[in-house]
Length: 453
Image (cartoon, rainbow, N blue to C red):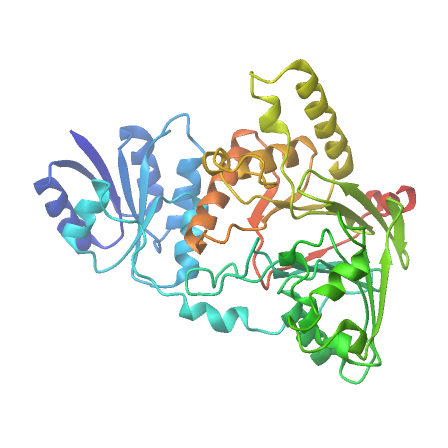
């Protein structure tokens, strides 16, 4: 007989759910709080756990994490979180904690039965409108000169994806702001650079803005926001753009071409701001006092990853890359192919080794990647494996697939965290989200990195 464990401090609701489930052929066990629920779960090993989110002693998030940390005892249990709130953040956080499904009370018995039988989609019709105000807030500027600030403005790959199913993580294409040692460094100029520009104008007011834009490559989703970068239209400002020559034409030609008539009403030459475009030749250079390394990566055309060395540690940015681990694991490849792939892996490992932060292309999961081999993007499993091998402290899954909803991205985060847990690592894993800020504090060990790079 199928076994279900109900964990809820509402005695009446437990009775109602138990009656429904027993009538549907389930063997039902009950717990009145999360602590008791965990004890029962490990003792009876149910097929399904129905757990309330807000409970005394141990809440639903903690129950999910505790269950998922003991896959040796409960490897295949299905966790359904129930709650009286309709907050999208709660649903996504529950999925990241390891929940399989999420139901908002009051629970319809027919929906519950279909869900447990695998015939009901996990989403419960929760809207994302409550998040709009949160994501629209002004970014914080509370970091000090000795600290390093990372702020995400665009996290999506391929094409902007606005809409209710992407509002939590965001639908703008690649753009990340890094502030360190007095420099403002912008990683890529996807559509996320537009809200960044507006925020900079508001922050600086009448003061001049000086920033450097590092372009990883000139695929459209990494440059399409630049014509809308407001600081480039102010004569007081200096905007420096650095990158490597493209496969067919130079960096300046490519950036200018997207602003030619009939594509855009204003040419780059008409922008009033002081715009400097420099094509890089060396893989080691400085932005003011900040050392930067570049590394060519496996992606169609000329594509570059960057490592910014700050007093707070290395920040590695690899927005578009197809990793070689999966190629190495394919037994039908000859020794020459495997040797090349292994050499590329080792080169990349050295590039990101001991980084404080790694922002990396994680567009697919392993199953999706099997249908996109050669497209130039990686799967979450390989990104996590690489980060663990390189002793990365904080991993951000990046370049989210345009068809992935907020819920699907949260499930990828849960999958990534499960791998980290299985490997016994303390590495922090998050999905990059527009509006997320991370402040890094310097240490003596990390300060030395800026001196040797």
